[in-house]
Structures are given as C-alpha cells and as structure tokens.
Image (cartoon, rainbow, N blue to C red):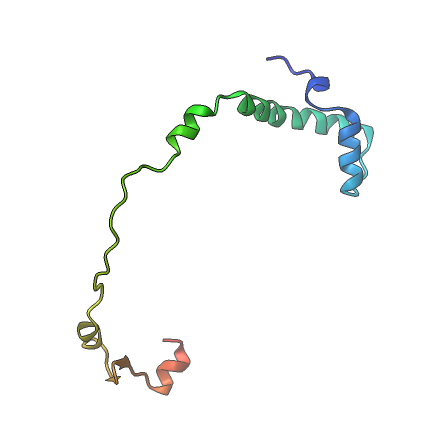
Amino acid sequence: MPFEKEELFKREELEKTAELCRVFLTEEEKRALEEELAPFLLMARALSDLPDQEVFEEAQPSAKVREDAVKESLQRARLLSCAPEQGEGFFLFSKKEEQKGI
C-alpha cells in the first residue's frame, strides 16, 4: 500500500494539533513528523478495516456459570500457632518489631 499523506491527514490538521499543544514546529519538523506519523496512521487504518464481528462473538461470556461457594481458606488456629506471641486471636508484636515495620 503506497503512502499518500493526503489520504491519511492534512497538513492543516498537523498544524492545528501542534497549535493546540502549544508546540512551534518548523517546516522541516512538520515534514519529519508527517513521515514519522505515516506508519502509525496506516496501521490504524488497517486495524479499522478488519472485520470485528467474529471477534465480538468470541468475546461473549459463555452461558456456563459456576456456583459460588463459601469455603474456609485459612485455619486461624494453625496460623496463630506460628506466631511468636498471640492474644485474643491476633498476632502480638513487641514495640521493637512494630518499629521495624513487621
């Protein structure tokens, strides 16, 4: 596919965008930007030409839904048995350990 910049964008659009961004561009910079932007604009055009119906159908959630069930994941007594100190069902830390960020 040959690059024709008139098809992709107009010089006025580039200048207006630069003005909105408060960027001053020399003629040389404008030409360079046109050449640098061309591959991206061609890619965007190619992507917009792709059929999306098949992708949309595959992206739909399946009708198969699993049942949610509440399960006990952690055993409090077993976890607390690993703690150096515990009290009222919680880990206890000394002031020194709290200062370390433990």
